[in-house]
Structure formats: structure tokens, C-alpha cells
Image (cartoon, rainbow, N blue to C red; front, side):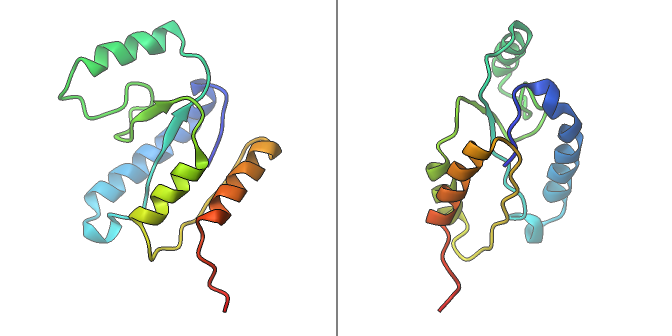
Length: 124
């Protein structure tokens, strides 16, 4: 989980995610559950971003997100981390999920609490 205030802050990471997404898509079934990208834009949309979204949403054949260029679609507003981790647990019940977090400490505590509430302890 990585938080940033705007899409400009995200651009350096975008190419890496595109490469990973392509590798997963072309890697066959063994890579199918390797990567799950959940994008949330929590800041106001710029007029340019709103225009791009409007234009691309009208094109039903477009398979990439208007803002990021990834196949993972951007959702708008603050994520409900309980729902995010609940969904991961339901989609990947017997899988270890790694969480990397970068952002404000207060939000990190919310992420940690939600992650822990959906983690099955391996301790006896």
C-alpha cells in the first residue's frame, strides 16, 4: 500500500507496475495470483484527469485505466481497508500476502489494524 497526494507523485512507480502487470499477464497460470493492484485516488480530480476519464470511459474496448494506464482500474475516494483486506482473504484464503506501506503514520496504523484483523495467525 502506497499513498501519494497526486498522480504526479505516482508517475515514477507507474512504469514498474506496468511491467509487473505485463509479466503477470504473460507468465501463465503460475503467476495468476501473484499481483493484485488496487488503485485509489483520494485527491480532487484535475480538469485534465476528469476529461481523460470521460473520454476513455466512453470507449468500451479500452482495457487500460484513464489515469494510470494499468489494467487495474482506479477507484476514487479513501479506501475502506477492512474491505480491502477482507477481499484479499476471501480471494486468496491459503496465501501469504505481503503488505508494503509508505505514507503517514496515522494512516499506517489504520492499515496495520485492518491487515491484522484479516490475517490468520500461524502461531499455535
